[in-house]
Image (cartoon, rainbow, N blue to C red; front, side, top):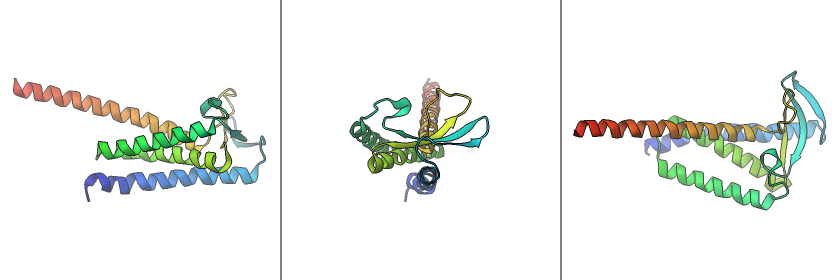
Length: 170
């Protein structure tokens, strides 16, 4: 088994499982403890819990377009699987990134398929206009930020490698 697939099995898969379970279990717990729209104090002055059914994506965009969002999620999942296969990276950051992105994507996809909406419940008390979100949304945000960082690192390494090769040949 190649080192790439060992990273996949040792980093991406366990991280994905833990994050996905955290998302789905937290949604289930909040759903069973609070009714729609009900609020509960969580971290005073920082975050409270309020149950919201989001029929769109972030900030409610594409509201009511569940079929489109489901198809889009499948397209992104397929694209990231392709990236995972094509990249063959041995970099742990890449595999952590994929764990976060897959967990977030699948967590919200499960909600869309099972309920026709995404169960959101985390709300910043200090920023009322910020949308209510969930652990899957956190995973997606962290995953995208890490992916950008990963690609920046790869660009810098490639640029340095090309510069070193150029200097060796001249």
